[in-house]
Image (cartoon, rainbow over all chains, first blue to last red):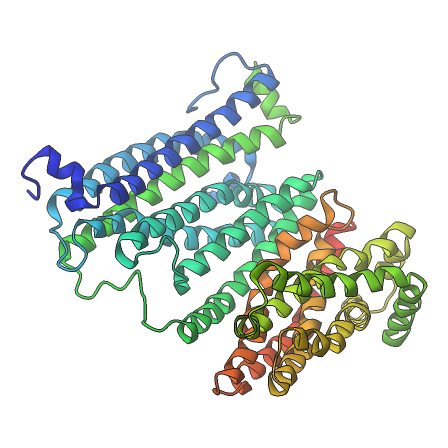
Length: 58
Length: 241
Length: 219
């Protein structure tokens, strides 16, 4: 284990802002991308008049 | 088994639908393992302290940004050469994900550079080439967005992507040269002298995680594109029932 | 055929002289803007000069790219060019050359005057002119690919810029770098030979790619 306490983990040896700044933005990008793609699919479904998901759909 | 039947959008749509959950699960698991190794197993770096841990997202993002561009150019080229719609749809599906990883590489690179080198942006040859790669992705997406006819958009995008792919080594070389002539000290954000085995493992696992994620999202997007472009076909009509 | 296309394009350009001159004036104005923005200190200007002149040349070249195929596309001549048995690549090469004669060469000729605004030495000016002479044709040739891809699209000039600027970057680096290298005493030979290589490569490959792009846009 590298960290003695949760506080140490979040501080990242003083570099917390940079490390978490990178990972949080990564998380936002990933979640955002998934949301955008799902939205695109939902729009297509609506335009096609589908009320239920076709098989094997995500 | 006849794999070529999956070149038809109608059969690929359902195949992709089955594959997405598999890749999504693999991605989630790899991210969990990779982040665990990156934060709890890999030791502190002597020179860079804890800041080096950005490497576990920066390097995989950079790798993916470059490989995805080549794969995008490949599928676009196949679609142009063999007139296969699905290949071109795949290229169009890859672009936004590639651009996202490029942005992430740049963002994490800047956040790594600030504590290490004192500036948010140093004109490091690799980061500068990443920036140009982002422009290439944006150019591809803008061109396709500006063309109404889907087949013209496919082929024009293919030409642009291929011209870009050929130019990437030239651009990288010229930027590297420009950088070494201008910079006094040699600044290399990715120089990691002796990388501990755990650090390398963490990076590899995170790369795997990003790949699994990318495949899952790209498959999702290509399914959305297939529905959009094939909406007038019979098989889509079948789904409606 | 090559000569005919060049002559025709030159004749058409002469009829619309204002188009040609606006590109030139844009170049002059942009170069003159920078000292106003950064201050008149000559040492700094001398250092900036190659970069500023080169970026201005890039932008001026790009502005005129839309004109390369647009008028022929609109009046149907381009379609005829696609239908002739003559090589489309050669036709594109001819048009790109004519474009350079009208939009690139004037920049090369006026650059020394602009270099004087930045207090560049005679030697630096010489290298600048040679680098522009080698580099501006590349801008026309590679720009032709962008112009062909965006034929008839809305968003016109800005879209071409977006597509073509990343491809221009090596030319910019070698061109401006040549002048800086010679100013630093390292000699411009390496940069200029690389520029020459870019020129040869684009002479060979760009017309072919632009012709392919034309066929895609005109289907």
